Image 1: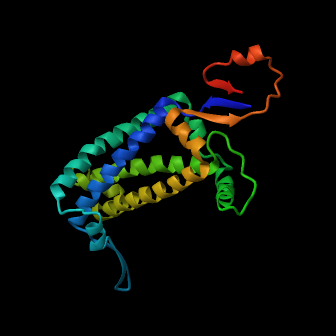
Image 2: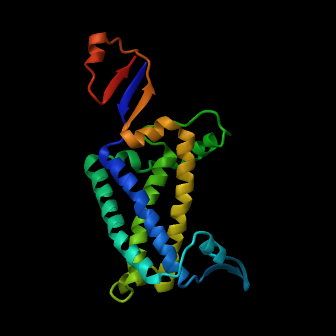
Length: 239
């Protein structure tokens, strides 16, 4: 018997999807700013193994030398990113949704089992509630990363006014490196997230859009047809 159950609230879906265009613009405008002084590279004993980023990257993506425009977009969308994050955190706290997101003591052990299962090394999937152990860790980490991006961004944007932030992050240069590293972390998260969505299948993706998912349940409760038909909109039975 197939049952339609509510999985994601409107607030959770809204903050999830709004972040995608916001972060896209933030990363793009950040690249405009970074190209004005692309100082970072992987250098060991005076030999540069990789430069972030080679000119070919900017040429391929048609990224122009427009520093002022990049800063304008970056600092404008910073407010949308921050406000959306604050709303998301407040909603999870007041709704109790944080209980499904915060990692548990066993989450780090089970996350390894999730990885083995996704790599088809382990046949049995680890236990999962609304989110599995790996998702709990990833979704909590992305919130911490978002806070880190805002704080390091403020330290870089106003190093004199927010001198205490610069001091906390080890100075202007280190704050800038951390801000850049967090951006790379977002890109890495996006790739993993998209792969996980593909692995999870259409039903899971549909639930993030509509808020509902279709699950298979065995009718072991002994409910009559009248009891079943009286189910609320959050638990709709499909014969």
